[in-house]
Every structure is written in C-alpha cells, then in structure tokens.
Image (cartoon, rainbow, N blue to C red; front, top):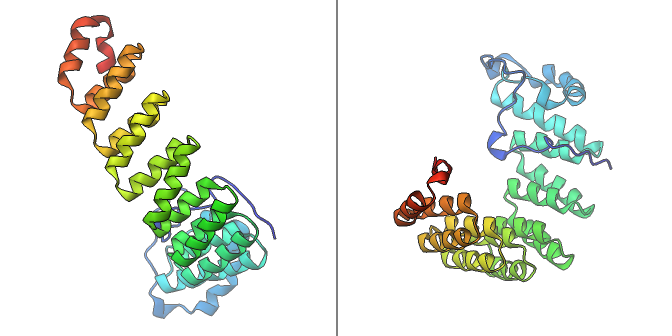
Length: 258
C-alpha cells in the first residue's frame, strides 16, 4: 500500500469540519431533506481525484457532507493511501475507521501516523500498546506522543527519566508539561543550565512559572555575555532590579529591551 507524505497531509482535529478553497465564502447548506445521498455519491471519484482540500462541500447538509467524506476515505483506504484516508475520516469524525487506518499504519511501522490516528479516535488502548512498541524499538518521540495520549503518569514519568538520560530535554519538557509537574519542569531547567542548553532551560522554567529559575537563567546568560537572552529571562521573571542594573550599566544595549 502506498504512503504518500506531504506537510499538509494531516489536519488539526479541531478543523475536521472545515473544507476551505481559495478563501471562498461558504454557501448556505442545502436542507438535508431536499437532497438524497445517492444523487451525490457519484461525486466521490471526482473528490478523490481533486483532493478534499480543493473542493467546497459547505453547500451540503452536515449528514450528506459526512457521508461523502466517509466514502472518500473508504476509496483512499482501499487504494492504500492511508494518510489521505486518515484526513477524510478525521473530517468525517469517523472514529471507528480512524482506528482501522491506525491499525494499518501501525502494522507497516508508521508509528507516528498511527499514534495520530489513535489520538484523534481517542483509542487509548491502542495508544498504550503502540507506545510500548515504540519504547522497545527506541522510538522515543513516538512513545512520548502515545503515552501523553493515554495520560499514563507512571509510564510518562519513566519515559521522561529516559529522555533526560539521553539528553532529549525537549521531550522531557513535553512530558512534564502534559503532566503539569512544575517541580520536575524546574529540575529540567536547572539541568539544562548545567548543560548550557539555555533555550530548553527557558522553556522549562517558563512552563513551570518558576520566576526564581528564570532569574537564575538570566544571571547565567549575563555572565556569558548573552545580554539579549538574559534580558528576556529577567523580563519573564519580573526581575525589575536586574533590568534596571542592565539599563544603568549597559546603556548602549537599552534597545534590546524594546
């Protein structure tokens, strides 16, 4: 089966009811009782060929549009165009068929896309299984997405520890942010300062709402001569004293605070 990738293959599930075309204004939906699905079903091959991003279905009542999208998804699925099927089923909000697409993607080793399908379908059982497989195969990024979808705190915490061991600080931050564990976010921030991963440190402290950590980061950056970034940290920390210190002692850098 063919897997066709493009940056726009997938959509945000919150946009599943939108089909946009050249910024046209949406037409008024046709009343469902005035149109029969069989009379528009013949449009499916045209929609498949043209692509659902390039057509406007807003003139159809919600049930007709959903059935059309389902039929388009079925056609893509039969042809092995799984990412296009994923998109069509997402727009149709067909969770059962999203699970089927996810199963095919997972079987073929496309774990990131399978996780996306299961996440949209809210298939927590499948997410947990796929997350375990990803861990065994060393696919840490995909495992993070899967475990966050399940919100299994024990597995998430163990995975975050492994991410820290591998110095994958961005993934550890993502996990602890999903867990809303501000204490551990601050700990990641401190570790990132030691490793001079300052952008990750800033992200961790900001998510933890840790003003003391942000000020510490600002001090470190100031010592390293990274004045612009130090100012940013002090501003986020609300550290007016250090901002005033920079204003008084580095007048030529005052424009960096604007």
